[in-house]
Image: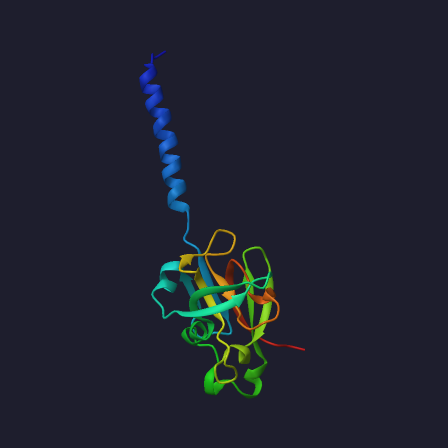
Length: 170
């Protein structure tokens, strides 16, 4: 039977703990939002991808009626980038397409594509990544859908993970 020094055993134990922590850190993934479904080019966007895109500001009332300032990328721009039928192509049967928005907690809501297209509306719906010049807080972000000019903020979803484009069916 071999004798081991206590210091050797401690080193081996510490190395095991260190390597587990290191591999756990390497498996942490950056948050993403996906645009998929009836698209030509599915997108998977990270926080850093979104930061490189053109941002606009949007003001929205919270549940208490207080105005809040958000900054983010227009949803229309994301739809164009994914090759969604918008603009001049949004006519006829394409007007039956919609976008399902899904949050990390399973909350979902829909928008017709016409509600997001500047050819049909003056409202600009954004995927926000900051509020009042700061990154969105845990529990609200990293991505929040901001829908200005609605009486209730029910479609201004927190922790958005997916935009899924579909055709409406009977």
